[in-house]
Image (cartoon, rainbow, N blue to C red; front, side, top):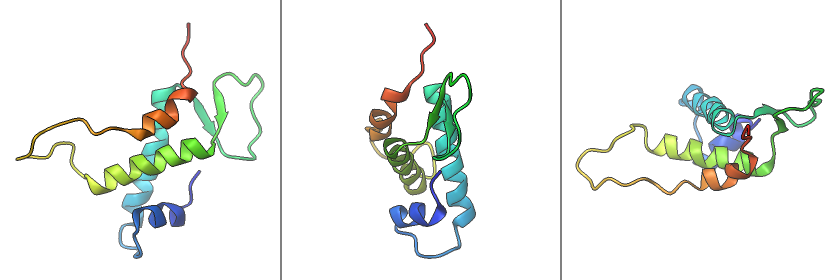
Length: 105
């Protein structure tokens, strides 16, 4: 949904030594989108299923949110930082993804 070159440009990585790691973060970010929004992402140009249900074509805000999340994971490779004041990071990712949440009522 995002090619590796675009992710590496976002991360400002100009070597190939971490391509597998970066691809893993990319795959995980889109998995997180699907889990958090309860949606099934489709590539642009991929036909929508019939019925559409919770399927959604990947859009620019979805990709931008993924890039922000990938960048966060790349820069902060551990879930906890020792020796500092702890606080939740503001996640612009959720602001970009929240309009796409599928809630069963």
